Amino acid sequence: MQSDFLDPALIPANLDRFLVRRSIFDALRSQFELFEGILLDVGCGQMPYKPMLTSLPSKVSHFIGLDLESNFIHNNKPDITWRDGKIPLDENSVDCAICTEVFEHCPEPEAVMKEICRVFKPGGLLFFTVPFLWPLHEVPYDEYRYTPFSLQRHLTNSGFVELDIKPLGGWDASMAQMIGLWVRRRPMNRWVRLFCLFWHGHCLGFFLNLINAKKILSSLMKVQ
Image 1 (tube, helix red, strand yellow):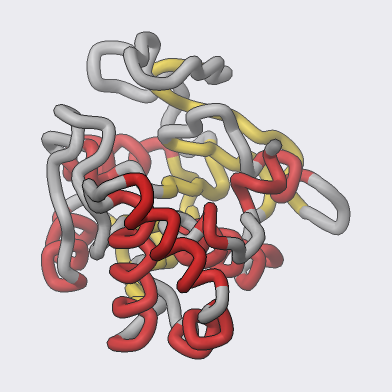
Image 2 (image 1 turned 180 degrees about the vertical axis):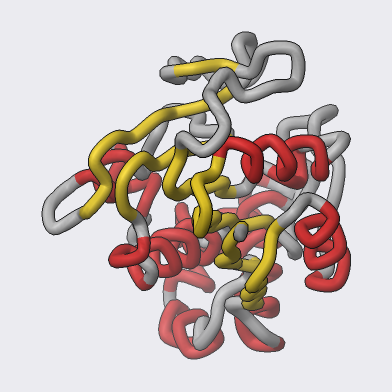
């Protein structure tokens, strides 16, 4: 279900993904008032955030999902697709954009960032997230893990200004993230995993105490 993807419950079965999903959901919700006009969802997948960002009192008038034409991992149905490395939209045609957990999959991230910048109207706003503590995923299309300094360099080179790059996490949230991933994804005997899940199910209070911050880097930036 979509609600389970956006904001999963904190139960043993969700320990690996609870923090990242809740992080993105909370970050988007905290910036909800800034999205308006025509919104472009870059790397939209199945557009899970569309209902949230287009429901009242949203100021978004039109939502456009952009993704690859062919995706061998997900069954996506975007509104528009990349064409020869270009977004099939005119310059100065988009008011704002989101790009959640996408840049780590881009072999040439600045090419993607420059295209987003090109279609923005003056003052266009980009909200994006990238993972930091996360295992290889969607192999072999997992390219990078970014530091704030590399993100700042790529975005500045691509024409973005007023960068606001925020790590929504710290020592405790990182520990919670790694515990969740270890319990759910480390190769281990089935009975050992069941014991770990049972033990962790009785320690969810401790897990919640660790989650005082989040794991992802969430950023807002503007183009002049």
